[in-house]
Length: 382
Image (tube, rainbow, N blue to C red; front, top):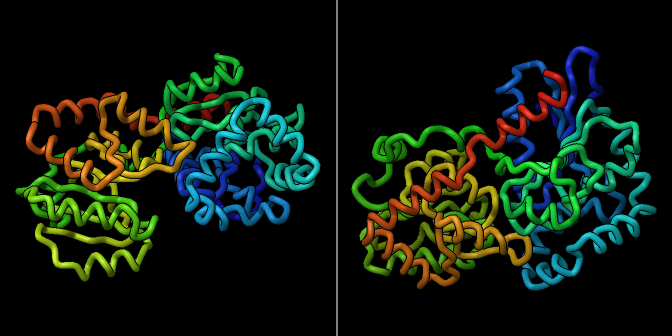
């Protein structure tokens, strides 16, 4: 994989350029998962490149969007209002038409600086601007939608050759926005190959990880949000009287990690910072308590891990909660008390828990990244 500014395609190998932005972790992760799948499917027959179009090419002050994003989402109601106010085909057209005079030079510089035999976008803001800058004489262009259900209208531009969506709900939204049905395919959400391996024996994984083997294990994720619901929810679970073990992943939130490590716990508790072992964590755990991010949901479904969603970003994550509930793969529990009730129910009713596991298996799409890679290969004639 090549993240350098420019790499020209050669005559020997087709070159695929991915437009992404670090406004939320999901766009980069999706691009990296597809690139990994391309190289797994086609070995060294394709070259790939990732371009952060906001950071590297957007005019000021929009090039600061990746830096602003973590602060913007801390005002969820404002974020939700702006999401819904701008969602819709007329609004999307108004945004791109109004912004084009400002973005024209940057968009044309972007597409000219990164020649490609095929372009993949994994961010809604890249689609219309890049297509307009490319004009009629352009390489094949694929939109990979990385929001799960409540997909913004900016994701959809009927000039794209293909629009690959993660769920049937997202496909219906594409059709609502007048996308040609033959261009819209449901493929699932691409995640790294390590999240798509067979489940294996939980006891073996737990021994390898140094976890408790004889108690239900609750995996808690979401420390990047600060002290918020993660710490409060962990305290409530620990004080509930349930006989279980907690595995808490704080990410890069060192303050949260230190606070949790200083606490005296009633149950076995393991606290981690940033880790690359999350695929094994998911396969070894019995339940996951997490924010309603699409990537984590897709990874949990692939691991057949019952999901308890305790927070969401209003707007694009609203539909994720509905999706998990409708698929029977988990529950929405926005208070610590509701999280405890969900865990109590599943622990005391193993048959009900097994049904949720089966629903996760049915809803998961571990082949998504490989499917997208093979679609790209077909369009390149490989």
